[in-house]
Image 1: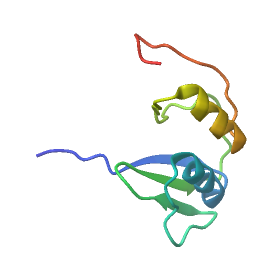
Image 2: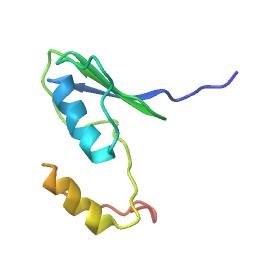
Image 3: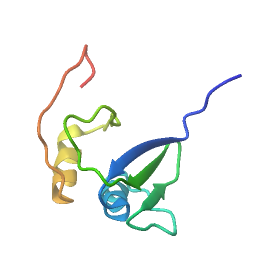
Image 4: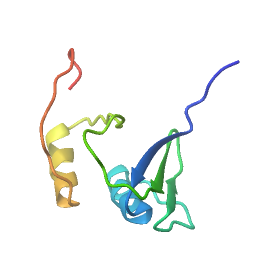
Length: 95
């Protein structure tokens, strides 16, 4: 038996809004039917966004790691979309 990763799921306050931000960053469309409660960006893996009642309380324990051929250009593009560049990390040679 094998396991397949289908989605990376994000708990959030507004699923459609957060999905829209990730859609712009990934240049992948949000699936039809997005709402403040639930939204999906299909693909491998897909990104799923679910509204939860509680506020974020601390560090995210799960996050996607992204790569780019020209990192400074992508950081600038994402900042233009409203993202914040908080830090650059080098974890055992992975930037």
